[in-house]
Length: 211
Image (tube, rainbow, N blue to C red; front, side):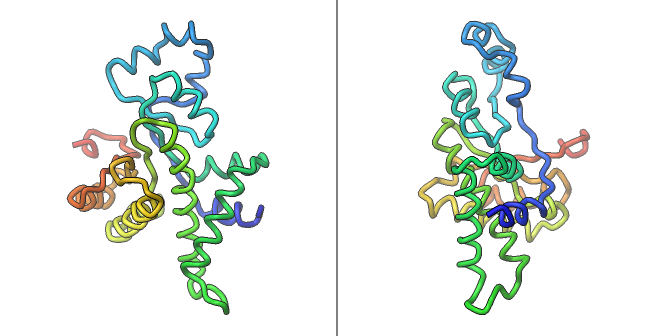
């Protein structure tokens, strides 16, 4: 179990973007404080997305009615799984089992990298499924950041992620595919949007990217 978890996480480098993080919003821990907080003011003018893979934290803030969306990151699962939480360890085990079933034969896995990549995506979907049940809006699931300069592979992986959600009974309307703000990532988003797959762009550091 620990090996499977580390094997998945070791391949990841997944910076994320969101509007609010628990480390900031924890300053507003009581109901009274929350009613007069900057968080409430922000919720009046924009959609708030919580950047956390901690199911309990997301549930707590979703109950305030201020948080609409959530974003996933497999690194969050690794951190929780390392603490021995059985829910996250089960997600990792299911992801590894699923990937092996889809890509391996009795005599082994012909392309180990394909198995690992599918396990990474499956892990993100497993966490996303939990978050979809907690927030009223959409859950953002990230395409492997290593594909930031490969349009075709980004599109392929995004389609696979959406297919796994739909197989679980979750409409693609509840999912945002997160892509890096490179030329290739933005182009991938255009392709996916034409297919009805909603996207958001992360790692935007310039007006040129935003344009």
